[in-house]
Image 1: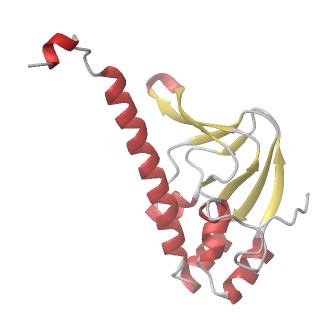
Image 2: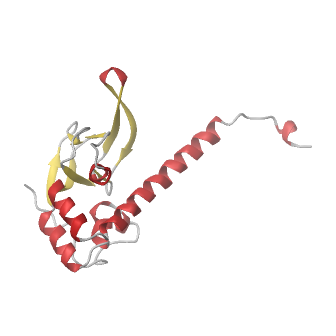
Image 3: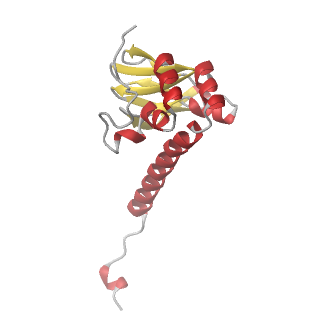
Length: 172
């Protein structure tokens, strides 16, 4: 196991405002000092090679954050195949949705190249949620950022697919 000092007890010791909304940082920011210490004790670093699953669909046993590298988000489709719905990189966090919803993760996240990860086992994550409800605020920030991104993608798609009218039709 690789140990990398990726998180710090000091809330703003080395992060920009943008960094604070990524990965386990968003959870760290939502915790009191005692919770931060617990998170830092429980989190582990792991490396993954290209093609390795980072989050397996139907499996809800850990929360994973990408520190470096890129990954593909895939959803199962009829016939047992997969469709890529997006790509992500450093700062993205996955797997917590299963614990929040009480259901299994519908997505699979696969490394597109070598990745360095931070991993928190499911029991530790659930313990944090129970002891420190403020974690829900951090998770809400992650979900809000994802919703904002999804809305921007949909807006872009609508603009691209809007019918193009001649200028003469638009001028009266």
